[in-house]
Length: 181
Image (cartoon, rainbow, N blue to C red; front, side, top):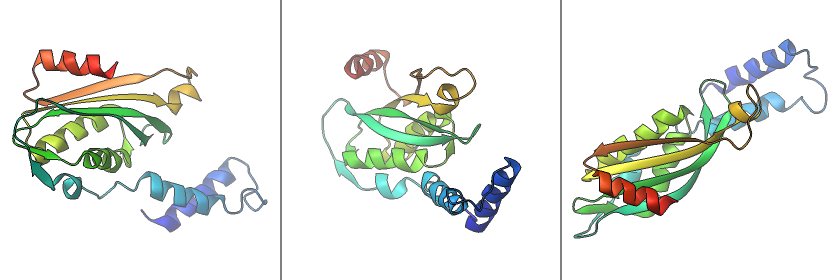
């Protein structure tokens, strides 16, 4: 991210909105916005490999589920936040990963300009790529501020997406859905 370009762009935006960017409440706003975007988009250029590469041998076991992984991301359509929870279920094939690494994977992929549908699929793809489980099932439930604060203005509405990769049988999907309720 080019911090100076972001600062200049925010200055131009404030000017275009007719604001006096020299007034007390706005004079540091361009820098603060640049800092905020650096944090919000900190997943750009990162990979999940370092988080998902340390695995442990695990014989047996049926399904591993990590649920209620809180996340926030930035919608690429309006540059507004969306946030919610993600559940990851996978069927190991001889190896598992430390559970915090699943949350770290969500963090890397959510800290980019995103679409919820893409985020959900990317999580499943990265787990398949790095862990080679029999199958993975990811469920994402999120509230989009572009739906709650503008446009249709429907606070509390949630969007649910899910992605499946590998062999994740229907009966196992139903079992995961039941556990998530």
